[in-house]
Length: 197
Image 1 (cartoon, rainbow, N blue to C red):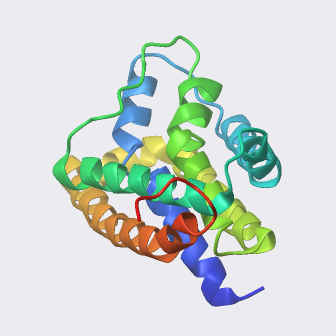
Image 2 (cartoon, rainbow, N blue to C red):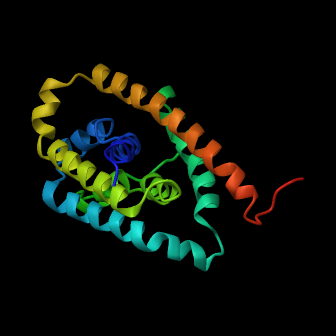
């Protein structure tokens, strides 16, 4: 297990989960009277991500898809997510009108959503499970702290600061998406998947 790899995984997941950028949504849910249990939301998110880490590739095999091919698809999703963050637009629309907010939409899909799950599988093409697991745990701790402190952060962080932070991580995520695509595309085309020659 390599510290640099753990740091890379942690930063990638932090960018994708974007818990700081999700603060306005969390605050809005609370303002509308929704109760969010920080511990429960964090544990459910952790469980979803760990399960997907260890059985996600088995699910892919059922459909005849290898990790490298999924990583290429994942890099495209990350590319789109990064554009959302940088440009402040919404391409993936999710229903947010709910009565109970702890599990839906906070744990899923806000924290452990499609982008996060895709990223976890994509990371398996480059990192070992233990490094990814460590990165997941680090991010869940950060998610818990942000959820627990959301009322306090509401008074300290301006919307403009959150917006700048979101754009900054969007740029980082865009670079990660390009690298992930570059590292796995040639592997994808050599695994027997359809490609033009």
